Amino acid sequence: MTSNSYVRVYVNFLKKFLKPEAPVKVIFDCSNGTTGRILRQLITNNKKLKTTFINEKPDGNFPAHGPSPLARGATRQLKETVVKEKADLGVVFDADGDRAVFVDDKGKEIDPILIFLLLSPKFRPPYLVSTSAGKAVIDWLKQGLKVIETESGHYAVKKMMLRHRAEFAIEHASHYYFKDFYHADSGILAAVFVLNEVSRLKKRGISLSEWRRELPNYYRIREKTFRVKDKTRTLARVEKFYQGRGRISKLDDISVTGKDFWLNLRRAETEPGLRLNLAAKTKEALSREKRNLVRLGFN
Image (tube, rainbow, N blue to C red; front, side, top):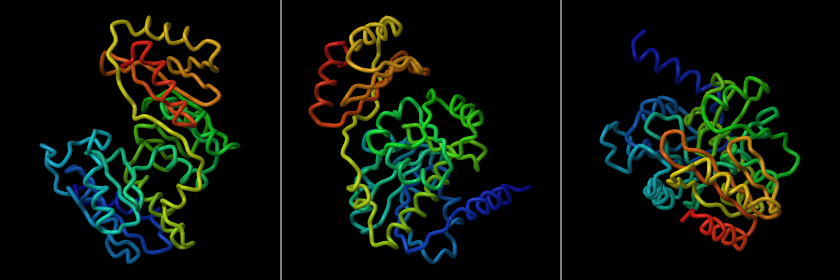
């Protein structure tokens, strides 16, 4: 098969899932990576999608904002374009298309936990979430979902999906995994499902930002990596500090769930440090735990 043949097979596979019910205006930021070629063919002749592409041309120098949509400032151009074009949705992919970050109609970035809540009704439970996302945070927002927490990382998530026969899983680093994609992550397929849901909301006269406002508030910091001399000793110090302050899990190094906060601290596999995720029900609780972490040396 030629490269064009493989692209055609992939696009035809994706088209089986693309089913917008109402017209949707979407901005795609391809991060000068590989997704533009697929997306162009995917949307061809779909009269319910009005699209604008930015940073579409592949360029290994990544002149727009780098290859990662999670880098600081990577969503700025997309947010500005969504607001300027009065779009319903914005999506920025990483260079190889396995991650997708979403922006609502007001130009606000949407936490992957909220994307999980938007999409989960379309899949059978149980659902899998990585420790970096936090089952506790999902429980704050919507109780009663059958959610299983798993270690972070591609291998761990795929293995647990197979074990539990899960159809849908997420990592907080904007990876979305699907049974119908061989239990692997796909930014484009995630975007397809989100487009479908935004179109259904729009059919009911609801924008994505309005849907978002109906959910309980919570506050979260972007994942941070801290360099430490001794990962094991630092984790032990954190565990000792939080004894009695919340429920502690050692599934993926250490997670702590308190009455109004949650955190996960785990070893970074590719660099000498610890990765921190922190969320809280109130701004005050978030500030309090940030101060506690500063006292523990995370500053």
